[in-house]
Length: 341
Image 1 (cartoon, helix red, strand yellow):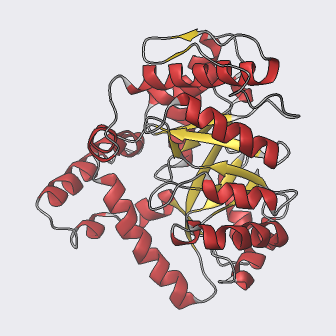
Image 2 (image 1 turned 45 degrees about the horizontal axis):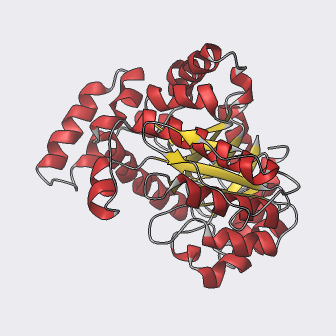
C-alpha cells in the first residue's frame, strides 16, 4: 500500500498548491490527490508537477461529463509531460442534477457514456503520440479531426493511468473492463470491498480477458485519530455525523446491506427527509463507527491501516485534508507509523 495525501478543499487554491506539493513530498507521502468541489482539480497539479520530482499526482476526481474528452485529453497529456510520467487521471460521473443543472451538460446512461469517454481519451492520446489519423466514432462522442497545428505531439511517458470512482457494481465492473484503477468511496468497509467491489471488478476484467489484479484500488479512509484524547474524541463525533449523512443516501445502501444494516439506512433517510439532521448521528452505534473508521493515535494509525487494508487496497489516504504548514508534526507521526505502506 502507498500512503497518499489529499489536498484540502480550501488549499486547492492555486496560491497554496505549490507549497502543499513540496510539503507532501518532503514529508514522505507517496502521492497527492486533488478533488473538484470549490476549485478545479487540474490547475493545482500543474504547479505541483513543476515543483516536485517524486510524488505521484492525481485527480480524485475530475468530473468527466462537464468536459469534452478532447479537453481532458489535452490537460492530462500536458500534466503527464510536466510531471515526467507521474500523473494519474481520476474521473467521476457526478450525478444527474449537477451535470444538467450546475454544468449545463447532457446526462444519460452514465456507465455507458463513461466507458466511451475513456475509449475516446485513449484514441486521442494515440493520435497525439503517433500522429495517426483520429477517427473515433461513438454513440455519445465523435472525434475525427486532428491537424498537426493542434496536435501537441509525442511525450516520453504516453501511458496515462485512468482511475474511475464509484459506489455500486456497474462502475466497478467498468473499471475491470477498461481502467487502471478504481477509487472506492470513503463510505465503505473492508468487507464491502471484498464482497462487492472486488468481485465486480473481476467480472468486468474477465469479460475483457484482463487480469483483475491490474486494476489498482484507492480510497480515502475515515480515521478517528489525533494528537490528544480530546482531539480523538472530537473526531469520533465528527465522523459519526459524516457516516450518518452518507448512510442516509439510498445510493450507498449497498454498503450497509453487506452488514445487515439496511434498516438503519432507511431510518436515516426518513430523518433526512424531515430535516432532523441532529438526530441522525444517534443511529450510528459505536460498532458501526468502528466498522467504517480506523482508529488510533498519530503514532500507531499506520499499523491500524495495515491491519485493515493490507491485501485489498493499493493506495490509501486519510479522510482528512492536507494543508501545508498545518499539523506537520501530526503528519510526520502518521507517515512514520505507516512504515512500509
